[in-house]
Amino acid sequence: MWIVFALSAALTAATVVTLSKIGVKHVDSSLAFAIQSVLILVVSWSVVISQGNLPDVTRIERRVWIYLVVAGVLTCVSSLLSFRALKLGNASQVSPLTNFSLVFSVILAAVFLKEKLSWQVIAGP
Image 1 (cartoon, rainbow, N blue to C red):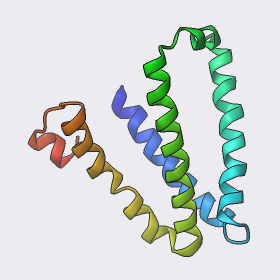
Image 2 (image 1 turned 180 degrees about the vertical axis):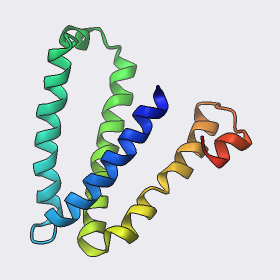
Image 3 (image 1 turned 90 degrees about the vertical axis):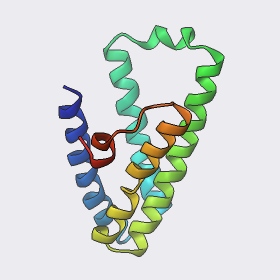
């Protein structure tokens, strides 16, 4: 089932790149990102609340909070950089480069998470 979610995420991300490129054509890239961020905030907290997971916020350990906050900051930085790249370049050029994050993810998972590298992982699922 994880493959279905992963491929759905990839298709959604590709659509986001296309729509974002259209959006940043006549708008500052930081402003475009800020607009999308507000919507991300509203939708994500709506999902948490509708699933009844809001009380779980108080049970998150301090160490986990630190990881999540740092990851959130890096997500913002990544998105700001991506939006700027889309403003300056073609989506067909920007997207493959930003998706090079796959290679970095595999390397970081092997180094920091001690995930095993196999030919299947290196070649893809």
